[in-house]
Image (tube, rainbow, N blue to C red; front, top):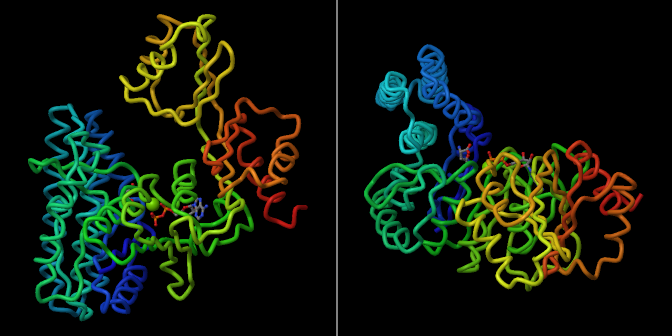
Length: 452
Ligand code: ADP
Ligand code: ASP
Ligand code: MG
């Protein structure tokens, strides 16, 4: 069995879905479980619909739903006209949109949007895309069953960023998938969508379809997990930032995890973890060029040392915590991190000096409550509009060029923080946000483009 996940751009329109059908058809002998994202931009639109509904902008919310409905109905028509499935698919898609409309309308009237309701709204994109793609596979002769991801991926009740319950997934998914495979050649389900143990809809957080794929890979003991996207694998830098990044043919699980965690959007940060448990290889592949090799992500034994990539997080804040008592009083660090943990604020980088602890946090996270509580026992300042640039690779400490490349790239512009992980897999610096992209480009140039 293999898991094949197709992202938003890979299912964005008729030609893209037609390519997906052929890619799946070519792999039917491997019993594919297909995981799909919403059509590109649809999840963004659903978030916007939520905001409009919460603000009781009924007209704007309904207008956006009308556009969403039209895009999906047009797509069903484009893919299924002339087949026996058109009417059924058209009615089903229409019904799914009507339910959404009725729900959003009710929210507009009440003007109160709970996280539970938000999850129900934003999960609809994957429900719609998987429905259309399932009909299309069948219409083109690939016998396929659709399984509701809520029966497979069980989470806690953090509705918008559900924490998967791996034991529950392991208990539920294999039997559901086996049942779904009766009399068909492929099974399809929604990425991103999940459910609490008592059946309330949750979602796995933005970009979470990759995570769905690897959780299923783990639960089903899949041979491999394929992440089909719009680029030819994992590259030395984000192709939207750097002009000539190069695809890496093979990287280690740890390198991929670190890259994803430090800003490389190509994989959801949690994707690697379930796969590592069983050593299931992950391939990142280009759905517009299925013949290309993409990137294989494997156990570190077979991966050479060296610098693999530069990634960045463009909007971060640095929280500096000063206390003269820091070193003297045992438990100070525990107290500081206890505050972050109590407020569920995730910390990325940490550095300390005699009387200061500096940590970085995603710039979009509201840290007001954390700062207030820390201020009860320390002096606290927050620096905003910073960015984190990370160089990732196995055994970086052996890389003589690394520090000179960093200092040449940043020059006199200044580093606010620096940190290197104990496993020598990540060296990160914090710089001003306005030089982030240029810093990435320059580091990439020094490290990967002929050391110019
Ligand atoms: P999908 O919709 O298929 O999940 P995403 O947009 O989430 O696709 O991820 C693919 C994008 O990730 C690429 O288009 C690319 O711009 C971006 N990206 C960022 N860093 C990297 C990297 N190091 N290698 C490849 N792609 C990257
Ligand atoms: N559709 C969701 C998002 O845009 C999940 C995903 O595509 O991975 O965040
Ligand atoms: Mg993605």
